[in-house]
Length: 478
Image 1 (cartoon, one colour):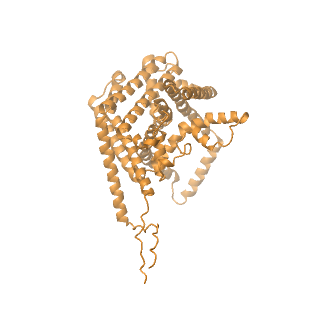
Image 2: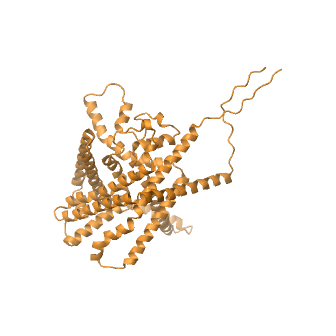
Image 3: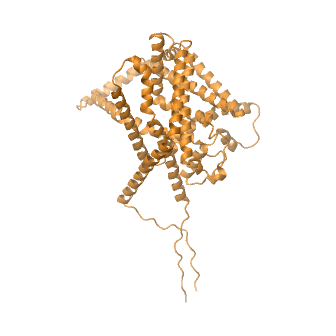
């Protein structure tokens, strides 16, 4: 009798999907994502509504208090007003972090980490650490969409109403003078504040005191405002300087020559460029930036709040690996110190090499621990798939549209009023049109990130599924 044939481990050929089947699967996935995002966001928002409203109100009150103190401090020093003004954003971000943490616990996001690997060192749940990690993208988002400049303009208006318009010492005026007349002093101030933040950060890591962590966030906020507001002024000055350079005239001459050549073929180059510019700036760019990019960047910022362990888990799942495959210091979201410990071979350096290594860690460690995670988080979110991202952007856009309609209806209901009315009641009107929707939007971000984790987990399990062997063929001999 012949021996039974050894079972083969080759995977049987997968059935080919037709275009209709693929389209049907994509549609089912889109509808599933839409249902999860809408239903789960509404449910968790309703269950946690009192806590969400309380946390958001506390953040708003802290923001308004910082703004009022900054207005009062403007009579003493515009720089002191800028320091207090930076607390405005820290208060808003603190409320955002606490709300996302609360919703994340309700959704069980951190419970996805295996129990044997769930031990943390306090970094993932420390409010000070989370503020330090998320402050850069948070202020970056606000600056990119004009909210930092708008808040600074509101502060200038408040100072003008208090001290009289045209008075010296406004925040924007001081930064404008510093960037125009004393740019090197402004640069020295930025470097000094950065060094101060690094010193306080080092003390926080050694002592572990939460007060120092919050102080780091406050100093970081002031540092970022200096960079953003002062950098805008320096950029404007640089552009004015460029317009007076000779090579700008050379570019204009080349443009005119190309236009004259195309005119022979009845092509009006200036009109074509004007039309393209208008289409891009008025139609393409607002949709791509405000409607598509903004919610995805917000989702990446929200992902940072759930800590490096959750992000590392998502990265491993995306690669089709398990959490047991994790090597400390080898992951994208590992701390700079852990990465260096993994790469370091041999005895520790001495003398000049040690000083150079410490200086390198002082700067690169800050970039790796606080700035690069934003980029890696955004890259991770983008790999969740076009179907999921499309459904998330759609739900986010609908929510923003409803909020805008509610704000417009409230303004129409109140009717026109004088400046004195809006000075007193304007913040409360903004709060009334924001309070129901902003916590719901944060719930949507948390649910969307949990859905990202679920998608990565499904892909990981599919990649790690054992290959079923085909039935063995038994030969019969005579």
